Length: 464
Image (cartoon, rainbow, N blue to C red; front, side, top):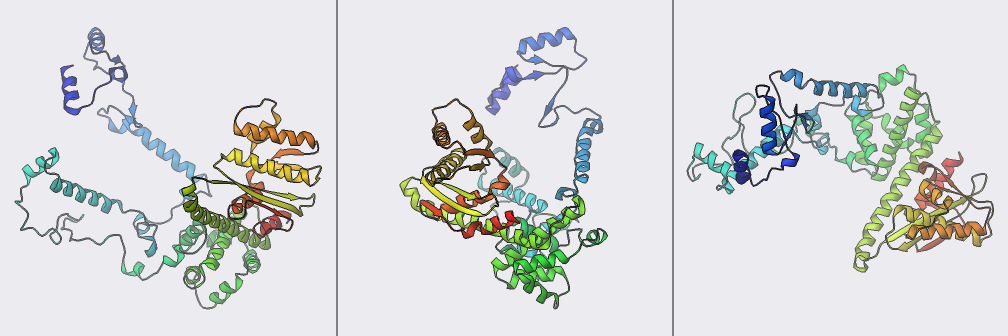
């Protein structure tokens, strides 16, 4: 106990006996074990457990002790093999090639060896700037170099390479070589498109996709690609380059470098759609026509662009609203007939920050109010919140803001018995979400009797 007391005084950490355990050797009698456990006030255990997933005590047979780690990793690798569409089960590129910066064709990952050496150098700096620490005193006792006036820190070698030679100083930050440095990858990462599309273009240019031979084996046609490019209006920028360049990488890099970043972004989105369509054809035997793929690519890019615009507008508005200490909650709804044709839509926003479920219930309430005033009947309201649908069907009321909104919805439905609320998946409700995102940049309440441009392609895709 005196040893533990000394440890507490030296470290400043008090031992919690109630959470501690003691494990004895077999050479100690059971009576002595029980006595010691009782004196110390620590629970006696027959074996040691794990700490941070590893055994607390390691015996002589280290291979047997850590065999479970190997088995666990092996099971994880086998699970990757079973997921053909998962990137984890594919070998992309050697790590040292991915450690290049994005401007030089890599992914910008840290070189762990150089990073570790930088941490060592940082520790050396701590020795010099904090000489009163215990570890600095120990090292200074072993190596004394005087006041350092005769040592050129910036040019003298300090660390050894793997071959034993001294490493020159100062080191160039990051990796790079003559071949990689000649290629300009900045244009690829600056195009206006979702990160997943940029990443796919990078993988194609680096040769990380097992595409050509596999697609030929499965007889995947390129006619769909041509139709998709014609639908999006991007066929011209690709066809003109095919006549002058030899590889797909050259086409992609040339488009990213010389075309407008928006045009290049739409091209990247189209490539991402085509790649997923071909994966579905190869692995799931499902395929979409080229014209539909083109519409889908434009639609997805427009949705992403609308979100970026809303984010930018929100960020700009936040600076002005921060003084007033107010925020906005937006709502959007759209009405279609039994043929899927557009009838009417509306958006609104109110000052104040509400929860997601409150915002969706406000959108439902606004839509019911507007359609009730206009005399609509036999209306099915589709919403992607199961909690709201369940709350409407429950009789019990509460005192929260959400319960008040649900109560008003029930009152409107009692006045209009033909109104019905139905749950749908979020993917099927993207029209309303797009309107709600765009509502922040519009006036506080808008009614559209003609089709808004932001949802035009979404409705066209649903009808087809």
